[in-house]
Length: 139
Image (cartoon, rainbow, N blue to C red; front, side):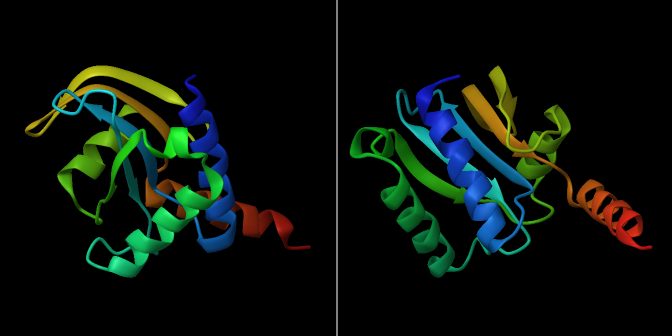
C-alpha cells in the first residue's frame, strides 16, 4: 500500500468517527492526471454543492498530512447519492477502513489508471449492520 493511502485510511477513520460514516472513500489516479490523485468520497452528511463540505475536508487534509503527501492530491470529489460513478465504485468491493486496489478501469467516460478503495459500503448494507448491532445490544 502506498504511504498516501495509509495516511488517508487513518484520516477517513477519524473523520468517520467525528462526522459519520462514509459510503465511499477512495483515491483515484486518472490517466489524464499522472502522479496526482483525486480523493473521491460519498457520505450521507456530505453535499457536493456545499462549499463548506469541501473546505472541511481540505482542512482535515492540510491538518493531518504533511506537505509532500498533500501535494499528491489533485482535487476532492464528492459524489451524491444515485451518481452512476458512485454505484460503479460500490460494486467493485465492500470494505471499511481497509484498502482494495483497482487498475486500468473505465467508469463512464473516465479512464482510471489506478484506484484505491479505502471504504466502500453501500448505505443499505450499513443500515442492516447497524440494525443488527442494535438488536444485539438489547437485553
